[in-house]
Image (tube, one colour):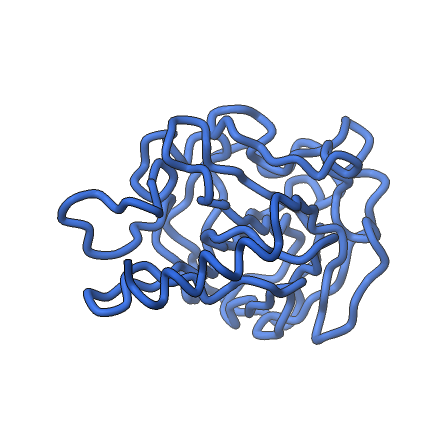
Amino acid sequence: MRTGFIAFLLSAAQIGAAHYTFPSFLVNNTLSPDWQYVRVTENHYSQGPVTDVKSQAVRCYELDSTTAGQAGVATVTAGSTVGFKASNTLGHPGYYSAYLTPASPAANSMSAGLGKTWFKIWEWAPTWSASTGLVFNNLNMDRFNFTIPKSTPNGQYLLRAEQIALHVASTNGGAQLYIGCAQINVVGGGKGTPAPTVSFPGAYSATDPGILLNIYALPAGFSGYKAPGPAVWKG
């Protein structure tokens, strides 16, 4: 067993089986109150994950049909740093990503994001090499940050943040998806054409190699983590 992977195991063991939500939105390091801009998720009490990548919950995991109207819309300047703060220490090893979708008719509408309109703007994957094995560098933190691409067109969007936790992903349905959707209005943007676009559900398959993966016994010929979903649009 490689040294980097041993370090991951020891670190993960310190956290145990804790779950989490992503209720707080960050704009240029300013933290919002819980659920001010993030739609309240069904797991806001249980903090349990989504495990069925074909379910409607995989989109934003909303509690009910009132959540969009109850959350506000944050103004975000294209090119700025945003992020999410978790309700607990992010102790599960996994893969992080963020997606945007234009929100029609508005970000606080439950009809936003229902089509093949989502594009990936950021990802944070485990690293791998023959000398270190699979290494997770994103453990034991309580937030993650990324940038809204500078050329993102102005307008209202849903911003979907996700971690796919892989600690029990060796069987179909074992991967744990932690999801939060913030409602934002992008200003100061450009004239980019975001692509490729996907739908939720639809972007993932339960057997994608980045979702169905035994991280403790990597498959023969493994040469690195293969992220699910589309390529990142860098704007």
